[in-house]
Amino acid sequence: MTGGHILPPGLSVTGQEMKSGSRMRFIAVLASVAMMLSMLPSGCTNLLNDDSAYSLLPESGWVYGDMVTFSLTHLDSVSSGELFVAVSHDSSYRYSNLWLEISSVEEDNSLVRDTVEFHMSDSCGNWSGTGLGPEIEVEMPVKHIRHVSGHPINIRHIMRCDTLRGISKVGLFFKSDTEDGTKR
Image 1 (tube, one colour):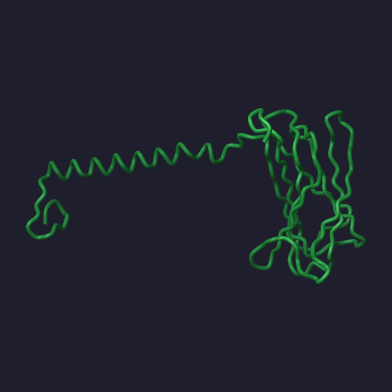
Image 2 (cartoon, rainbow, N blue to C red):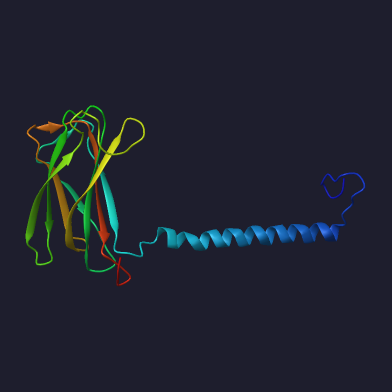
């Protein structure tokens, strides 16, 4: 045994060689960590004008008239792109569709309302969307908009019931038309 390390029989390492090997491993590990840390900002930074957000709904249900408000932000003050809505539900959801009202404040400060129907299942009762386990997510494009960064977008259900059960969260996604000034 040399310097606290177990070596195979017939192999010996001097103290200088041990220090040199440890130093090289330390430099290699440090370089790897530095490379991984330098990649973090690019993976977490939103270089585009894309944004997304989710809002959890109460377990007791989504009460008719309760709005879910999103405030998406972009690098540009105004950005054109596609607006998507996503809804997560479980098997306790009783309907084959979901009607939503989406309201947003436009660039000229006018209020615009859109009514959207989500097809939650097909005619045979098979759930649409994707998911693992008990929760299924349905996502669909809503419309093309010019969104002012930070302006609110509100979503509420307009089903014919007081409290909608089985919906666990609502999400909103904005996918910009441009990437650094060029058309996608």
